[in-house]
Image (cartoon, rainbow, N blue to C red):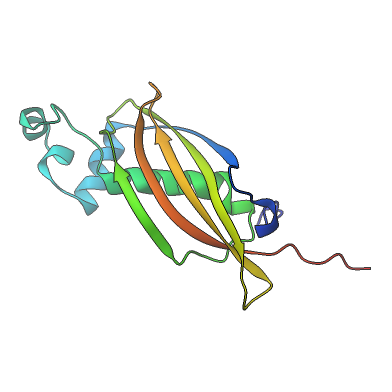
Length: 154
């Protein structure tokens, strides 16, 4: 396990954490959709070409899964995370296509220490995924629970 770098106390409203980039391949788009969202515009070239999208696109759930992986790799793997009580919203704004490169930004909207459990707090955030053209393709609004930084031991 990585050394913890992020505690509840390290988050603040307006904070932006860039989580890197990820290239999307057609093979993974089709594999994910075949397993979890086999709609024709995700798995069938001919049907996708005839659809309103004009070609194969990633499932929105695949896009969220790629974003989640980037949040784990870039933040949660070194955070005192305690899970999430849920999401407030997900928006799929533009199709994600094979060859796209997604960049994900984690933006802290609000933080609130727990009133009943002083060892933790809740962070409200929005994750934004943009393609290589800078176009916003997906947003995820949610919250995460994080442990407070332990008091220094003498």
